[in-house]
Length: 160
Image 1: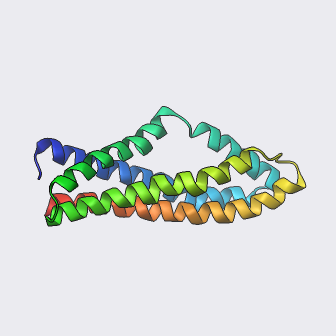
Image 2: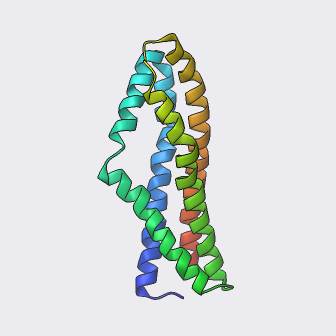
C-alpha cells in the first residue's frame, strides 16, 4: 500500500490536519475568550473581520488542500481494504472530512453568516453574540479534536 508518493501524500495529509487543528485550537483556547472579553459591538466587529479575512488562499490551501489529499487517500484505502494500515487511513480520512470540513459547512459557516448579517451595535447583535460564541466555540472544539485525531490516524499509517 505504501510507496514513496503515497507516503508523501500521507505525510502532507497529517501535516495539513495538524495545521488546521492548530488554527482551530487557537480559536478554542484563546481567541474566542479574548473576543468574549470585549464589548459585544467590538467582539462582533472583530469576528466579522476575521470571518472575511480567513477567506484567503493560504487558509483555503491548508483546509481544502488537506481535504483533497484525504479524498485521494480514501481511494487508496478502498483499494487496500482489510489491511490495518488501510483502516488507520480510512479513520484519518473520515475524521478530517466529517469532523473538519462537514462540521464547518453545517455548523460554523451558517453561524458566521448569521453574524455577518447583524449590526454589531444593535441589541439583537448583543443577544446573538452570546449564543454565537457558545455554539460556534462548541463546534470549533469538535473540529479541533477531529482534525488532530485525523492527523494521528494518518501518522499511524506510517507506523504499520
